[in-house]
Length: 276
Ligand SMILES: [Zn+2]
Ligand SMILES: [Zn+2]
Image (cartoon, rainbow, N blue to C red; front, top):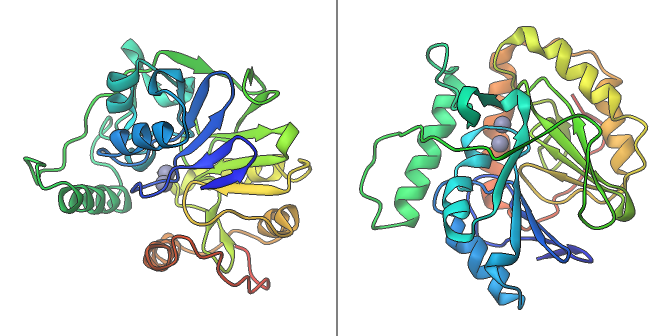
């Protein structure tokens, strides 16, 4: 699906949105769940481009629903995997979330859901076990670095959801990629869950840093594209205090996933009154 000139969302992937930036080279922003790589390659072919033109896989953060297809896509196309240095462990391996003990319940839960989806999508899938696979990172990026896509793709380091979460700003198109730093609930925006609730302050500082960006199109990690009144909606989040308990955020996120699965291509109806 074309979002703007030379910016496409790959149809029929699972997990996060997978976005293509079509310049002389092609960059993919997030790959979604394991099993998506072939779908991405097929889409690239369907618009008359060659898979080997994919040179960069840019990950907004390490979570499996964004990075799960990255290693596969690298293996298929040779594209290098790019992430913020906050998302990598030693030996340039992407965080898996298992370092330092068991991941939080919500991460294990979404991982289980992703595995179930990938099993149901792919009958050749040989295991129902949840496997946290290793992904190598070939290039790290830092705050304010600009990658050479579509007139310049600016990296904005927005820690909180994860230590190395990034947003991406395509100034020429006025497009802001928000990763999971903002959750699109279709009828409102909300803050995502953080690994530890102590990171919420960091997240709010990151969201505050986005307030004055000149963007008109917002692409969240999940859900439909935001086109109407984007920046006022974004600012609406940090206009309000962040004082609800984690379990309530978990329920809101769960409702979002349920809703999103029914309204994948539906722009939704913006209620406007509430952004948390
Ligand atoms: Zn995430
Ligand atoms: Zn996500």
